[in-house]
Structures are given as structure tokens and as C-alpha cells.
Amino acid sequence: MGQLVVRNIENSVKARLQSRAKRHGRSMEEEVRDILRSAVRAEEAPRGGLGTDISKLFRGIGLRSQIPELRGHAVSRQSSSHDDFGYQRTVGVNARGTRCEGD
Image (cartoon, rainbow, N blue to C red; front, top):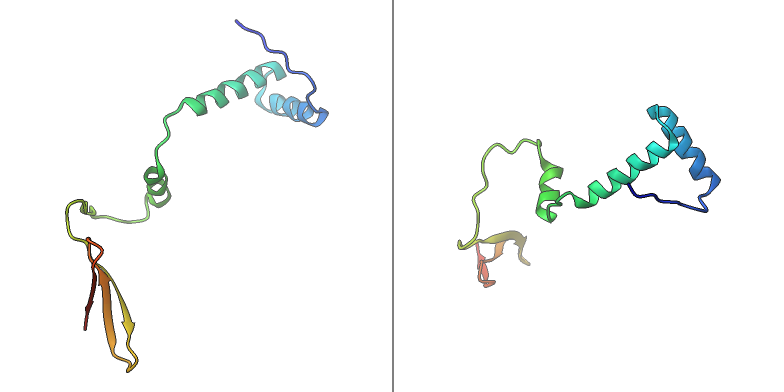
């Protein structure tokens, strides 16, 4: 097994390591080994992308039905606004980026 010497650790860090080791019922040396193992394991774990992170945020909120995938389908984004006379007007953009207006 390899060895590692770490010098110039602040006294406050050393004291906190000792306290943490005592809480876990092990030596400070074993505590440091465990911290290093955990740090390396966390880096090796596969990480999802942005979509995975967003999914984790909303998991369990209550969406019960599947959301159909939109690839290859025309998607219309619409918003309502009012013209100068107070009439409601719908303005949207289709999947090709073409502006669509209607009443």
C-alpha cells in the first residue's frame, strides 16, 4: 500500500478531523482514508446531464402520464396578447420558427 504525507494542515482542520474521527469511532488516520476514498469514488461515479438533474428535481411531484416526445412533430408555442382595442390575439411560433397569428 502507498503512503501519503500531508504537511502544513491548519490546526482547526486537524481538530475537526479528530472530532469527526471520534464521532465515527475510528482513528484520525482511518477517517482521512475514508474521506479520500469517498472523494475519489464521487469523481468516478457516472454523472447524468442537465436533463437528469432537472428530472431529479421534479421526481415525485405528481406527473402521472407520459409526455410524448416531440422530435419530428410540429410544435406550436402560443401566447395571448391584446391589441390596441382590447381584443385578445393569439401569437405563436411553429416548429419551423414561422410566426403565426390568429383570433
